[in-house]
Image (cartoon, rainbow, N blue to C red):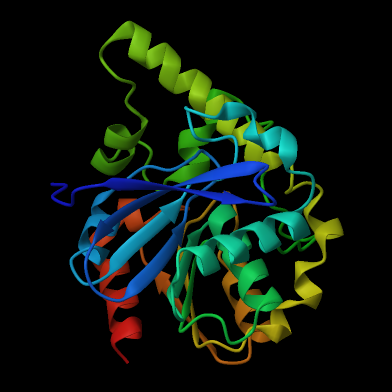
Length: 267
């Protein structure tokens, strides 16, 4: 059950060209959470983190329903890295924890590599950003809607998958939710593909914060072999593979994922 009360802060970045909306909840040390490609959604994992941290969850430009055309001011991944660093600075967050899931995990790795010393610890959850020809990352944007449950969950028929993928009962809300997700995938996809050309593999060595790499054992979108690929390149890192989970372990195996993350952050 979600108990945290969400507030919103709006911060101008990039010379005032982009207004970034940040959901804020909880209390305690600062933790920045970067959402996946489909956009921001509050879940039980974040709710648990908010019991120990003040969670700051910025919405990627264009994914905020109130400002969908902000994506027109975003052109490449390096610009995004600079915008997010500016955001963290303007929020006056001193050495926050940085957590990112999937697309957000790629951003977290890019930002931590771009600004060593800026973050206390880094957590990557099934991050995209690397490429192995023998284990290609599935293109979630081009995938048929019927394939998404299989790509995202180890058990597409399980309660976690069914709860997350169920559309709103109200028909108009269901249409709006579907359109919003498609738009968010387009916004975030603008800076992702082609993955091998982005060059994150050459920058990971710059991350100096202790890092935890969490991966669902049965991730069909970004195979679990990528966890060790990240770990081999981030100097002070460790890997936790969550049994029985797919691409979104914090939803499909919330207790196990939270235990791994909270144990790492407590060290």
